[in-house]
Length: 193
Image (cartoon, rainbow, N blue to C red):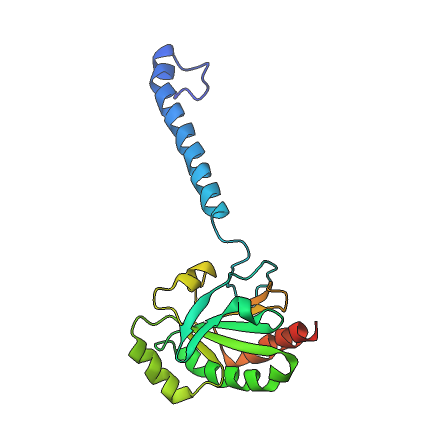
């Protein structure tokens, strides 16, 4: 028995049976493409956290509480700011904090500051971490994670380098000791401008 492959070989009954399925197929393809386009276009522009991504958009402004007051990104305009998202349970954050402290003191004369944003829901866990590491830079608290959403944070820690003009110039997801030189070179480039 030969199976008809061409529409001219099929009878009118076969064509009538296949017609509704053809419409369903095209509708599924259309709505799938529409959904994909919507998802791609709804991502915040420039808020990527791939390892070592260069970005060139305005940094999302924030105003968050610290232990001694408040820190707002807008008030730091004119300085180079490294925004570091971290949590007390994050192993690589334990490696990054001593390095962040050394970068903050080393490049402070050049107009460089670090703002570390904690995302723990439990403030006491964050405070215990801070007692161990005694940061010399601003630490802000965002237990609701709204700032992390604005920056599309996908890994811990995630760092965003903001230039003097308020534009994101670099982002980095994660932290290992091998990352130190790369990130510091980006800091040097930013403070030189």
